[in-house]
Amino acid sequence: MFSCPYAAEPLFFSLENQLIADGVDADLVRSIFQNPAVKLEPDIIAGNLKRREKVLDYSQYLTDASVLKAKNYLKEHRVSLKKAFKKFGASPSIIVAILTVET
Image 1 (cartoon, rainbow, N blue to C red):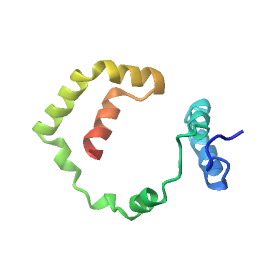
Image 2: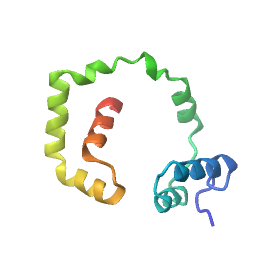
Image 3: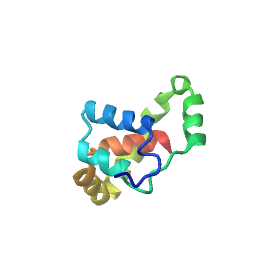
C-alpha cells in the first residue's frame, strides 16, 4: 500500500491522521505520504526542532522594501502561483509570505 518507505511507520501514520483531522484534504495528504520521493530527513527535523522561531524579529518582513518585493514577486510569478492555487489550494499571497520569511 505504501510506496514511501517511512509512510507505514507509526509516526507518519499519526501525522497523516492528524493532518486529515485538522482539515487538510485527505486525498492530498495520502498522495503525499504515498509518494516515493517523500523521505524522512532526521537532520532537518532535528534542526527545525532546535530553531527558536520566537526569537526571530518578523518586523523585518514588514518594511516598505520587503512588501514591495513581495508584491513584485506576486506579479512576476502570478501564472505559476495561480497554478499552485488550483492544484494545492494555497493562496498566492500565503505562498509569497512563506517564501519571504523562509528564504
